[in-house]
Image: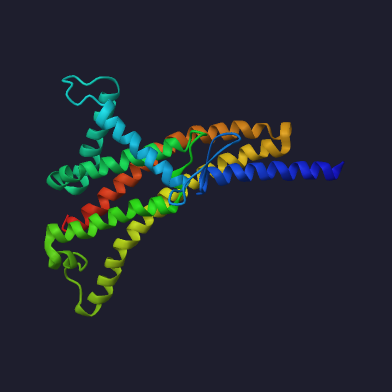
Length: 263
């Protein structure tokens, strides 16, 4: 009898492990419904598909559903415009300056809405969490790094770009050391963006599945874990917005520091 219970517990643990693996780890299968497996082509992974779907949702929202020609925006259009204005006036302009902030608002809005969409999709059972894939977050951070470096060269010129890594008044002897540290810091900032978004989204979902796994494995005894899972789930909704905001804010801050080092 104990052997049967052990076998049943092992099967339940395997079930929980499979769901965790499906939801936060990449694969070549999509399980939109229990017992339904869609095999993806070799060139497309599950998180890649989620990224494409999230991109399509953002494009649909702003190019089709949003009524740009409306004199008095209402409903969804009003909400989207309010969020765009927030990104422009509270993130882009204060950190990058009015001129460059206006120029980079479309990029920052793309980051914000795309990350937010992927985060929220990860809370829907039929989807997976693309932002729990370090490859996805690394790709977004690489764009930030490219804008930081290439953009700074365009704005300040090659000499101005490298001079920004040498604070004024330093003794000549330590200039090479400080230059190396400051230059390396630009890459560390991009790495921090990668890890911050990935780790927060990955950890939150693992905690939810850990609580749900307690109920699956232990049955009624583990029922209180469901309430904890629901609480973490509600918190994850807030985290979805918060992480999109933090990534966008840090991107604006990092770009502003490299483009306008004097400020």
